[in-house]
Length: 302
Image 1 (tube, rainbow, N blue to C red):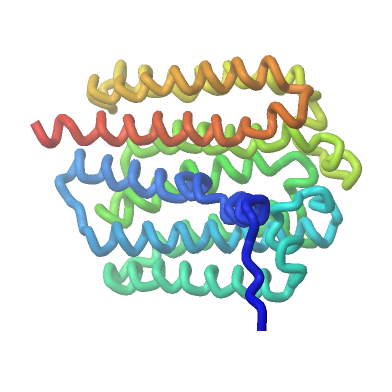
Image 2 (image 1 turned 180 degrees about the vertical axis):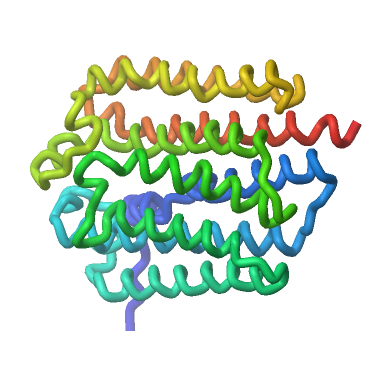
């Protein structure tokens, strides 16, 4: 009996398929919403936070796995060697694992709702799941009509951040809504930037992504404006008094934002060079979100 070992190239493909950096987009809304809840009310339930965090990761695993399955059905991933469907050649297995993660993630949110005897968080998260299915799931496939960024903004911004805030306080907050817009925009940039290197595959599969519609040059020109709005919202919230001056720390996120915009601006029409744009967008998302959390929590700890 012989044992087949994975070579460096195979390991790289599996690592790319696992997408470990992507899970920051699931974690950050929960961290931001919970941080604002603690700063405003002094309430923080570690069990609720940990359960919500794990559930959010599981739900993102479900979305990634199911999207691989749905994209395999349309043929759009024919050149995506790190697709889990392409790697395993077992669409049913990936679909089953995805649905298992969905069930476990929803079970975690149900447990929070049962502890609190309040179905609000469950309702918000279920709505996120519905939007996630509408993104790539048949017969809707709204992502193929260029609506994926809108669905992404709503799911990872207002719905997720408010659900996290509500899970700690059973109330709502104006500051949380502003933070939700910031996190929603930076998360949407990750999806937006993932289209630059696959324009031809998207067009061939009939997917009218924003980059297919705009072209790579105009798409690259749009990036600085989105980054500016995301960081500008923090300044507006500080001026209004919803955020403390400490949240200006998130403006350090301007550095990875500049790196992202320069890189995409230079290589927008070179798929091999711009394929890492989504990871630069993830860095901007993570840095600005983490610093926003820090800025929110510092006044409460001083």
